[in-house]
Picture 1: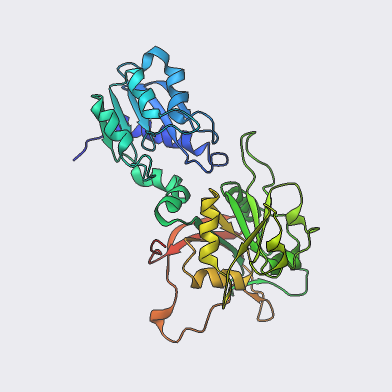
Picture 2: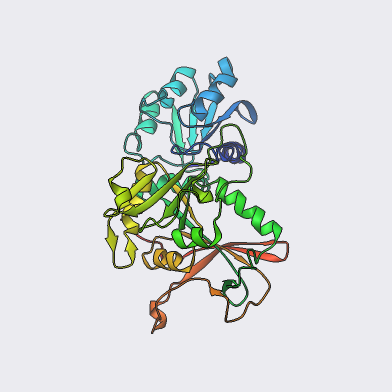
Length: 368
């Protein structure tokens, strides 16, 4: 059994906090933090800030300089062992003269997948793996989902009343939740590589689907993806403006599919509409690992039925809207309890007068 000291825990927790700073800017790369320390004393730290830029280990080693020799490096993901747009981080650690490396979890990416750890050990460096691994994996759940399942991590956001309704159909109920809940949605949007909605939502509400304020100069605006099989959404819709990039997804037999336009993606259809599994595969291929869905009851229901939802981000307002209001989601009528969709509570927070629930499927979906 691998032993980790209290100091080890403290440094890895700090490395995770550093990695968190890249939450809005690193995709398609994972979020990684690194701390270089002699015992309790930190001599260098860094995090990966954006794709194409130096990795976390490089920033930390630059800060440590010659003090890296004989130190321990704490890294939230296995150091890369291949040369891409940047150099191999395992070699930088070897060249620095560190004595030990503590890794939160192994990188399953096929060009790494244990090779970085093996190379460090071959160089005589003591490598320990598994410290706060679950927390580090949670930080990169989208990246890991793409590598292991060939699809993004899908978070379905919905706001509802106590009686499971989303809005009145008189056009005067744009929001049912309060200001704090709406601000929280901005936080989750900013952490996403893409935001998916349907043509019905765009035609009814004409949303922007942008992040109100990006957190840093490196932050990347999420791609707005509009599922629009029949090409009904006009180019004048706010979701297609120049405040953020956008992608219109149409049926492959639609005239828009014949145009050479990087802002249009053509997909095959199914009885329910566009092929959602193929959509997820295409988004993953584009490096869009974390997908947030803000859609109406039909698309939400289709994603749930297809077992393509990894987390429900549910905002509950303390009000009753009545039977004339729109339902939260369209699902088939289940005849037996064994057929229903079960979820487990991941966490709950109060935001003003509203509740935010994060729920995950009781039985997570298997790889595609």
